[in-house]
Length: 553
Image 1: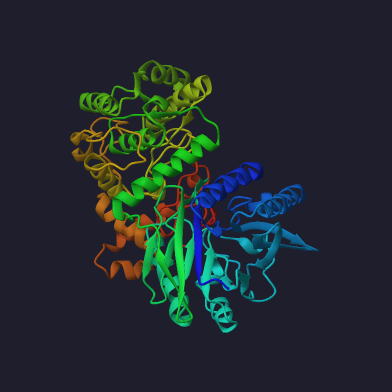
Image 2: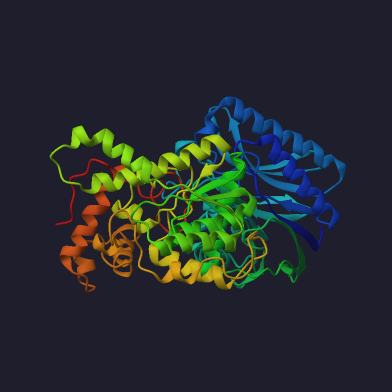
């Protein structure tokens, strides 16, 4: 029996569906761990299939490919290199399990099934997997009893306590824990609950990947038996991090590990969304992106994120002025493009607007101009962006923020056109904060220039869609600091109207915002995906009916 262990945390980026590619990624990480002297390499939940595989995992051919990959990787451990803990879907008889395996000395040395299948928020695992029939037994490796739990089994009482009662000496927990602003605090609290209840240290291994609307930022960690996070793997970066363990007085202690800093606030959100854009665009094999750069704060932030994610050469920005576009918007858009170093052109939409006016004149005869004509301008811009996308192979990034998506302050088939929306889960006041952060900070993985990349005037001037003369957002909406506060209480916290009013907000305003939130559901169903940032995002978390007669009276 060994009294020392070297365990590698393999925080890698699997791709859903790319089983062969994931096997190569696993091999590469194992080789790196072997060179560092690891005895054991731990990978994230469902690393073979990628997570979450959604209904793809129901395909028998996919299940067979994953099974074959596990068997192949097991055989490769016959080389005397480090053992591995990997996750994969696994079919036995009529049941499909979310499983982890200890692969050692050329075989599957142990197999454990996930017992608690989450069915809330972005998770719907009971739709696809069968829960493990029993809490897992400890897994013996080099004479050490490992307590293997898969993700949700750590978050709830039961599995950890059972493992400890059966003699487990330390916990290893492969995870697919999505990013959200509160994630690190929630993860450490859940891990601490298991550690406190059992007195056993814990290794938390998370994946790193943008997967459609869900993002995984890594941030794996080691927690000591006292419940403190002792070692930290980086956020937003792949790593194979070695942790050294020693047994003393019948207790295992981690004596060495990674000490990466973790960011928070605007830094954390900005880097998360940048990773999400990079993975979505590159994994879907687009050459680059095209963005309508209006001279406003949302499009400027979107452009900065795109450059930091993909590099300036992969970003095409287009100003599409109308007769209502202010000179300062033209100046600000061009200045922002120069700061970012992106391709920039201007395509005036006045000829197109005039053509639509002429085509629709007979149908609109006798009616005053209204929001219809405003929306035609936005839709014409959407047509131009999609034309550029088709011609050059770039994905259109839309630029609407969560405040606008919440209340429907956006035009279907206009400014909502596109393949991905980086700001979809970011409220307007957060947009301003992110712009300020990016002007003052940088991070090693960001590909854009250091220093200011968004002109000050873009951040300080009153927001406007510029679809009519002297238009301001606050003509149609309450001030964003008020709107965002009400929306957060309605969306993230599901608070009753009377409880929001009790906090000092005008009742008529709260009811109006609630009404706008409900009637805009049909627009959100047709909006492009965007990365989850808040506790509750639209689409995967918040699933409301379009036809909805409920109002909180």
